[in-house]
Image (cartoon, rainbow, N blue to C red; front, side, top):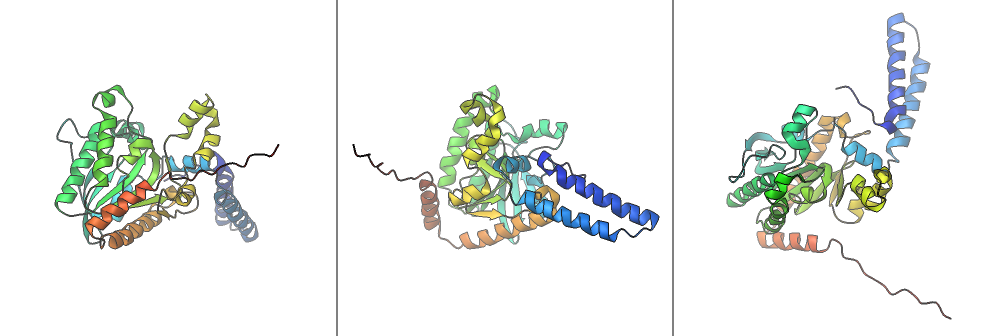
Length: 326
């Protein structure tokens, strides 16, 4: 797969091209260019370290949206076995933006619920750019109830800019579908693990995100609103998206501090799209470890902990400001 660099990655891309040219020239003309190659390699390491160790919130959003980033089906292929997709909400249609099914994680059979984007125009039209309709959330709920019936855990892979906001989606009650999922997931009597693998946009993400343990990839984001929409509302101009991204505290690192998520899954330098296998191995091992831990918790205790986990979100204390003496 050819690397498609983001704007801030251009210095790295240029150095990699230069390094490749030096090596090709050395091999083609039998010229000793070892010193020049080592110098460029050192410069490349320094540049990577400088850029990737100081990423802004907006740069992480750009990485999370990278078209070459691994999507849900890429992780299913590498982390799970015996995948069987189940279709339809038994009311209206099958939502291709939200593939769901049965799979095996390690030795544990489970229900897997996902968002899925596309990499080209044809795929994006089929997957609706990862924006699910009401029937997607109702299909997810149907499978979650199936998981509860057969006492198997639920694993949710989140990657969506948000639920689809079109007229048809509103006519079929998208907000009600998401609200019902929030209620039902809160009282589902089986372990639930959610992992934000790319974009975690608003209620579209939260509709399958109520979980006992929430993981997030290092360069993913989870937010109540997109930076562009926030910028348009506050500044009446989308050009302030970078400032909005900082203010929203949407990065994995900020979310861990705020206890919105429980664990960050590391990615290779440059993002998950640089090495599918290593990042899938990181996610798979984390899912297996967490599942082994929470599967031992009795159902009543699991439900109480899940409830308290989400009740704690947003709690703050308000102190009195000192009044100045006259």
